[in-house]
Image 1 (spheres, rainbow, N blue to C red):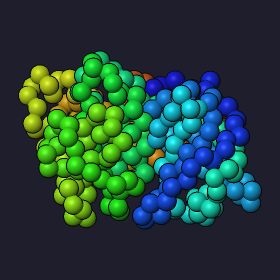
Image 2 (image 1 turned 30 degrees about the vertical axis):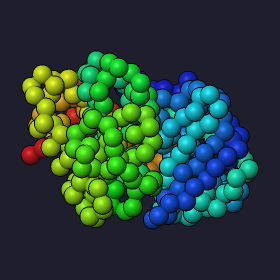
Image 3 (image 1 turned 180 degrees about the horizontal axis):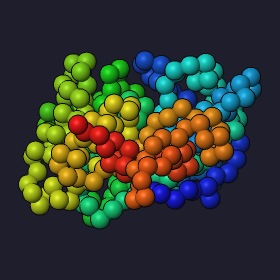
Image 4 (image 1 turned 90 degrees about the vertical axis):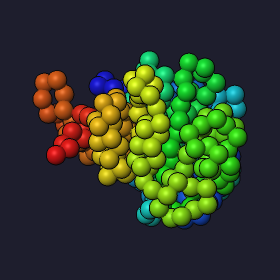
Length: 290
């Protein structure tokens, strides 16, 4: 995760195949590109044009890929004029896409991946779950949190996972055979009442010492959430990879507008989230636990 990765970046004209709207101005966009579908790794993102009238592109994490059909999905929320104009794009439109960009998550030997995503930080976590699906070596558990309605219809789970009999899940993860618990403070039906870190702590508390030694956390979400997840990982002495969310301009390492301070073996260093990340060891970024 310390290396700079530009070898996957290409510019593609991608056709919109589907564009779904969900509550709270959330959208899932399906684009066609065999090259991006084949090259994308969990945690990477693309930089796409939103309209003909705005020159600046917008970075959006890849949520899932379909290599057989040469497509990839993006989940985004309207937060400004750029994403508002993107939401107006129609099926059949062509969107210019640069990507995939950045260094994503790295699967390690730890057999119990705990995947934690919050808000628009859910897509990289879903992408990581897709990468692990069907692999009998791993037993992942996914926690997704949102303080607005989830951008999918929640459903009861039939899988053998932590609190699966009580908590609803994301249907796509259910289809992939990956247990998932949803968390929120909004008192949604079938959703854990609390922060994602509260549910994560409950999950970790259900494991024995041997199981805990095989856990690795993968997380993406708002800064305060990542800080809390990193603190939890530190408390349990668990390795944690965090995908950072930062405002970006060029998104390919040229402008250095998305730098963050990272602790390295040789001291503090300023790293670009776009190409040096967006995934970093959480302890290297969030290390002041008072």
